[in-house]
Amino acid sequence: MDWLAKYVEWSSVVCESPLIFHRWVGLWLASNAIQRRVWVPLHGEPIYCNLYIMLVGPSGRVQKSTVADHGVKLLDNLDVVVMQDRVTRAYLSSYLSEASARLGASCISIYAPELRTALNEMTIAEGIMEILTRAYDCPRKLEYRLKSGGVLSATDVWVSLLACSTPQWLTVGMSRDEVGGGFAGRIVMLYGDVPHQRLPYSPTLRPVGPCRGGQPTPGHAKTDRRNDSHGGRRSHMGQIPGGE
Figure (cartoon, rainbow, N blue to C red):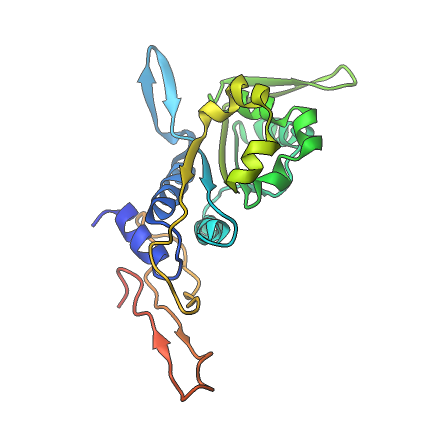
């Protein structure tokens, strides 16, 4: 069984989300582990594995942010910078420029559990979609002009995005021009409205340790004791794939 299959098996134990959500969150995690270290040459230019992924589904039905949270927590074990919630063009540009000067590369992941928070009217008006569209191609050099007339410059850019949204927000949150301007065309939009399973409650997993050999550290699912008051019943979800 490969790493992605093991990740999907592990993540889907405690989450009702459609399996396609689990698979693409796993792919997004793999791209974060690789960043600019691997590329494919195409027409003389390197193509990197950064992904812009959006999980779309009805509110409260398919646990979009829950399945994403499970994956994002694993990045705590890697040297990956994750920017969450509201993202502004000025802050993103400033970080990329500072990282470039300090590290020689500008790599960052953006996680928006509620896309309407990250891309609100203010951030859209400031031009966040423009810089995300330009950063998607992982340019060798990216420049951002300040209102004061100065210029922020970043080299070896790599940006990935994981976002969650409802269909309703997509119809009102982005105009036709913003969608047609190229930003939406760079996003893998995944829609799901049917959970792959139904859980009477949400069992929890032990925190996953550092990744070793490209696979999550083995662990066990915790025994949930919330039903002890109802006849002493307990439920054990078994082991994470690869556990003892």
